[in-house]
Image 1: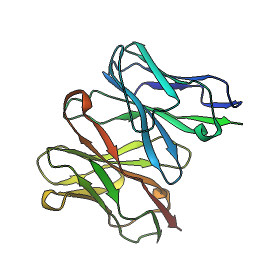
Image 2: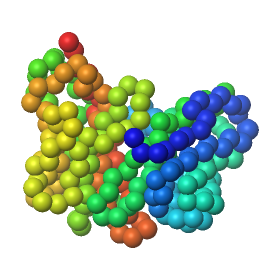
Image 3: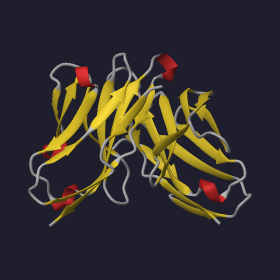
Image 4: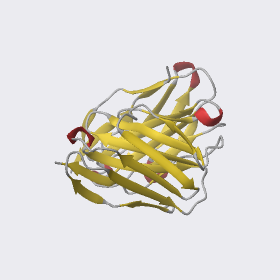
Length: 113
Length: 115
């Protein structure tokens, strides 16, 4: 498996609190992605990064922010968690040259109560 | 807009049955195509990929897929499924250019194989 570590793996938090999820890679890949996975919705892109301090929004970015201060780390922050953000969050990385695929982390199961 | 459509949301098969999962995409340019598998409770893993060349691609665990450019399709096949193939299967297309190049995902197909 590619060197991708997500932390924490499980978290329960209360509505209204900020939450930060971390994705750490050891592959030196340029691109990093945050997805959420929900039944019936497949994978939805939240934010992605194409380099240090270079980020862009995905299709479901409201309520989320990201930061990438180092190549290896990509942080996802829920500014004020809501129950609708209960989900499984996956980080992915890719070289994103023409002929490479994405590699996924193990996922973080977040429950907002 | 770019999109990926997986025709079957839920498939139930018996062991040894043949499998075909449909995937169509909408994008007029050059694409890279992927099938990923997600076993229960696990992360997504690459099953197979197409970049160029032979449109019939062979992947792990006996899976294969055929890219038919004229039909914008990349269907996944396996001649004889096993109980261990029970999983969720996702088709994805890598489309776009430059920094906007990213994966577009289908909604997934849940496969249950009965022993």
